[in-house]
Length: 592
Image (tube, rainbow, N blue to C red; front, side, top):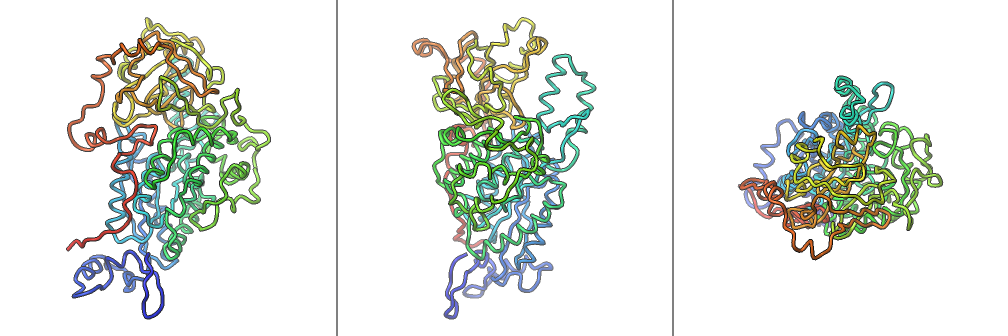
């Protein structure tokens, strides 16, 4: 909205009035915009006084975790109407993490770019962003940040607890656990296949502290939701109640001129890192938060994740770092109860979409179940010290990852956080699958499995393949974790001592491309180090293997070509170089 003096009084002029207003001359352009939108709307729908609210809706039958968002959209519409606005369903690009190949991450930036252009091109005064599955909330926030109009998020919410054979079965986490037992010969294939109906029992996204749940935590800690919404289960009627309240809120935000740039600041980004660390959130949050910051021109680096996260203890006992699931967290007090425990670590100044600081919502937030949410005095994992790795996402550096790599200590095996082992190198995921169970593979529990060619450029898109299945003969010996290193990602629902996002990636000339079988790898998470113990002179003589180079992506057209040419490294958020910064919401030229 912009201030305009009308008849001696100052009023806020809606952005949408640039489309629907009567304007100068014959008013033909405004006539066209209004006439084609009438179709049953009331006479005053486009009179310049009723905010036009687009509900950016990622519902899709091919994004299973977002299937229910049409219902959420209808509740948002009711709220918008009750506050005097016009709610408009705007279907946008949706990415189903479990279905699309080669990886949903290949299209996060494309989705954000398409959303941004539609947000800018349409007569929209405010946005309600409906997301759930992993890439949808970050893509929505990246797009909204680039346009800069008022916006608020409604996370789609987690599914009900999975239960199998009397035990909680986490969505995703249970898949990794049980599939390894099948490979080890301790669980029948039939029993494994029968578990899928027990793992996913309702609408909603993954019920572990995977990436989808972490993105909801991130959105709330950034101030981009009504406080208390994150983690509300998808089947819970209170999600629809909150959706209506969000519809009312966005109309108020438009009238008050409160934009996404007022809410997301460096302080709120650091608050999000704190929240994610306390919850044991997904490593994927690193690339998404940096990409959002980049759209707003706010500096955020890997060092921020390490420095802020190291101060934070793990308080949430959720899979994959713990035992419980999102429904349990919600019933135990939810995110606000967690944040109340680390209130002193939060920046108190950033506001939320309501206009009030996040910390103002943390009074009288008791923990109702101490098994699910630990107290600050008795954390599940204490904050990092000089001798311990801590719980938050750790950033590793060394000659194997000059620009950084990350690991999630809370999901790793403590005895492997300081480790020396010989490398076994796989030049592609196909190479891995072909050889991992070869009886002649020279592997021991101390070996370090290296998977390369899986970064943003090399694959392309940086797939979730880094949490490699262990070799069968290792599983048969009772071992369930090994050190694994990759320039790819892993699912937020996954676990293990897995070093991720190695930068530069192999395809960008990183040292990872030069590792050979038998090289000694030294991992030291407490000291934030990852080293290839090979002399610099020897590395200077080496060249990447022909098999590695032949496996790199070679797209010649379309989005994949554009992506490969312009994607940045994982260490800066893997956005496209020409999408950094914001373009604002102004459209200067008419369409007719």
